[in-house]
Structures are given as C-alpha cells and as structure tokens.
Amino acid sequence: MGILEGKKGLIFGVANERSIAWHIAQHAVRQGAECAFAFLPGEKMEARVRKTLSSGGLEDAWTFPCDLSSDVDLDRLFEAVAKSFPELDFVVHSVAYADREYLQPGTFSATPRTVFAQALDISAYTLIAIAHRAAPLMPSGGSILALSYYGAEKAALGYNVMGVAKSALESTARYLAAELGSRGIRVNSLSAGPCRTLSAMAVGGIDDLLKKVEAVAPLRRNIDTSEVGKSAVYLLSDLSSGVTGETHHVDAGYNAIVT
Image (cartoon, rainbow, N blue to C red; front, side, top):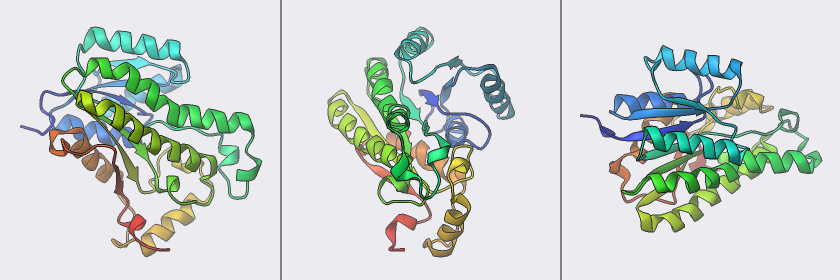
C-alpha cells in the first residue's frame, strides 16, 4: 500500500514529459493516488498533455482545460472537479509564466509594468485563486503544494521578474498556510534546483547555472527531476502532517552554501 493510497488530487502544470508536475504525478500515482489534470487550453497543448499522460499509462485520467488568468475558467474547472471528485486530498500548483524577452541577463530594470503584472498574476496570484476554490473540497483537510526556485531568495542571473514572482509565491503559501491551517489544510512550497524543463529553458544563462550548481553544490551534481517528484509525494502525504508554511529545498544542497 502506497503512502497516497485512496487519495485524490488535482495537478496543474503538466506540459510534457519533462515537466516537474508530470514527475510529481507519476510518483503520486505509484503511491496509490488518483490524479486529475488541468492544462492550458489549446489543441497543441491538449495533444501534448494527452501524449504525456498516455506515456505513463494515464490515458484515461480526468483532464480539463483551464486558463488560470481567467476567473471564469477557474470556476468552470472547479465546478467540473466537484462533480467528479466531491472531495480532494491535495492540489499541486506547478505554474509560472513571464515574457522570456525579460528573462535574460541585463533586462530586469527594463521590465514593463504589463510584463511584471502578468508574471505576478500567473505565477503567484493563481495559488490564491486555486486555494480559494479547492478549500471547500477539502472538508477533512488536505495538502496544497506550490513549486518554487531559489531565485525567490537570492538574485539569479537572468531569472529577473520570475524571481520576484516566486518570492511572492512563497509568501503567498505562508499566508495561505496561516489562514487555512484551522481547516486542516497544509500549504507548502517546494524549491527545486534547476532542471531542463520547458519553462527553465526560457531563462537566459540556464546552462551556466547548471554548471555552477554541479561544481559547488554539496552533492556535486544537479538534481534529477524525479527527486522533486519523490519529495513532493512526502509533502502531499500524511507523513508530513505537521508541516505547513515551509519552503522545502530539493537542490543538492545548493541553498545551504555561500557561492
């Protein structure tokens, strides 16, 4: 019996087989969870998501398109979720976006107001919007997990406005943890080391960052995305029943040293 046996969860952020959300989903399913998936609308994205799910034997998984920048879409999503899953045990928020033109070294001070607002909306505010709608489906408590990165704590070359958005995301998780704790709902962030995901490759200087982590991290290597999935399962399960408001690092120890 797995540590998520009998639990049902909603996962945001699967885009392809390299997505952190996909690795989380695979490990959750292996531990007994039933996972539903929300994805960005569009024929190409839907085809990509269905191909990914099929590759892991989840071709029959529950899916629903949702533009997280739209409250109407979010309402439709959670109305559909409530009909199929009267109760949820966990939610995974693995969503972030910023205009890649401003994710290059030397462009942060030129970030337009609209780009900044969009990054904060999609990367951070959506956690509030999702938690607000998910909480009524967690009458017995549950776990909400957001994916972050060390650029939320320290300036990372090229990460720019996304770093600011991730800072807001981690703070949002703490405030949600404080508010929802009385309802038995835990909210945590998982700060993953750099991985070659679709979103990470939009950040200028990612190759240099990967080399640096490998050279100086205590474990002297970069992480495998699967390691993020395994740690996420712990935070989604009852094994972490006393953990909330935390930012859990999975980065080969890179955050623990001065570089």
